[in-house]
Image 1 (spheres, rainbow, N blue to C red):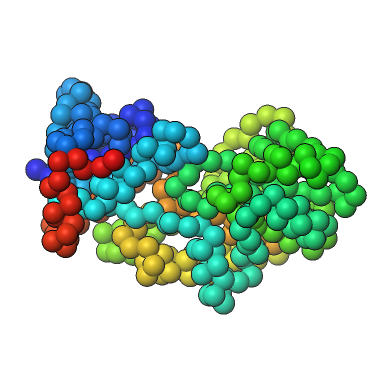
Image 2: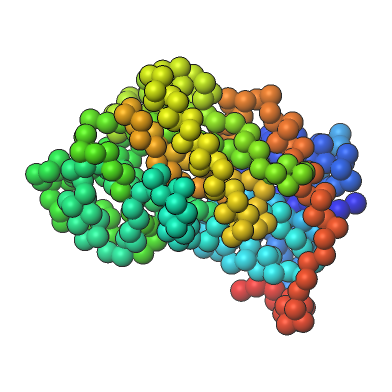
Length: 370
C-alpha cells in the first residue's frame, strides 16, 4: 500500500479529522502516518512518528519518509517554526516523495499579480511592503481618513496574527488585535516601537471605504476544493453572526460561526444581489489563476471583507485553509472533504516524481539537512 504522511507542527493538530481520514484511507489502498518535521531522524531518512491501524488508532512507530505528504504545517515566528521550515523544504526535494499540495510563497506578490486580472481589480486593496515602521505611519495618515489599514504576514503559511489600524485624523492610532481587544497610541514613536518587530515580514493593505468611517467590515470565508474531475468546487461559505461579525466593532464576546444564508438574510435585497454577483466573479477568476501559478493545489480559501454599503474586498487567500470553523457550520460535509483528499492522493500516487541527478545525489548524503 502507498503511505500518506500528514505533516504538522503538532501531532494534536486537527487530531479528530486526521483520525477519521486515516480510518477511511484503507478503502483507497492508502495507509496513513502522521509526523512533525522534528520527527525526521538525521542521516537515516527515517521518521519517528505515529502510524494508524484500524481498531487501534494511531500508535508510535518508525517508518521511512512517506510516498505522499500532505503538508498542514502552519508556521509562526518562533524558534520551533524556524527549525521546521527548512526540514519541510528539504522533504519537498526528496526524490521518492510527492506533496499533495503546494503553498503560496509570498502573499503580497500574489495580490500584485491578481491585480493584473481586470475582473478582480475592483476587489483588491492597495498593498505595500512594511519595510520600516514609518511606512505604516505614512500610510495610515495618508489613507486612514477614507478607510482602514491592515497588516498581515507575507507568508501565507504563517499562523501569525493580522492587525487593523485606524487613525482619528488628529493624534490617536488604534490597533485592533482581535474582535474584542484594541490598543491605542497617542504618539507616533509608540506605534513605531510596536510595529518595529513586524518590519520586513509583514505587508500593508488599505481598504477604501469612501470616507465613511462608521462602516464596519464583515468577514466572509469561501472554501474551495478540486474534485476528481479536476474541477474546482465551492464546498461552502461561512461567516459569523451578523450582530457580532463586524471587525472594528469592539464586541465583548466571541461570535458564533454561521452559514452564509443567515448573513444574506440580514442584507437589503440590492446589496444581497450585488454581493452574490461579486462572489461569482471572484470564484470564476481565482481558481484558474491558482491552477496556472501554484500547481499542485487542490484546496484553498478566500477571505472577504464586506461593508454594510455593499463594498467587497479580497483580504486573504490561504492555501492551507483551516477546517474547524467550516465543519462547525457544515458537519455533514466532513466525509466529502475526506473523500476528496483521499481521491486526490490516490490520483497522484501513480505519477512519478521527476528529479535531477544532483537532487538524487544530494539526498544520499549522510546528513539530509542541517
